[in-house]
Image (cartoon, rainbow, N blue to C red; front, side):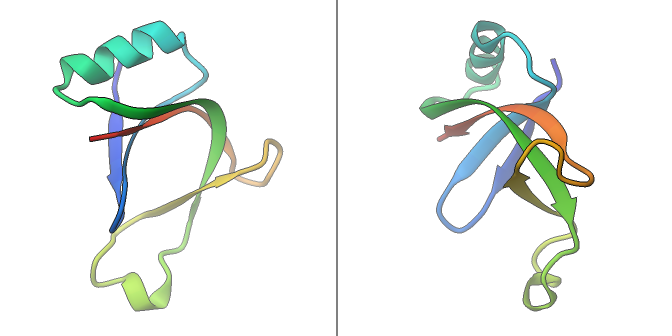
Length: 81
């Protein structure tokens, strides 16, 4: 399971593309050396252009969205530390 990690000023998130088994996902996050601070479950994300004022800090920008939104993809995710 290939887990991706995103950060912002306040939070770190772990996610994997697709709605996968949550037990396997949580075990993989712990194996990577993280602790779950809050498990969120299944959701949808979309990649958007990086806001102009943040282009120096970020190469890519993702936001949570609704199923069916253009470009949306399924994720299983959690807040980690």
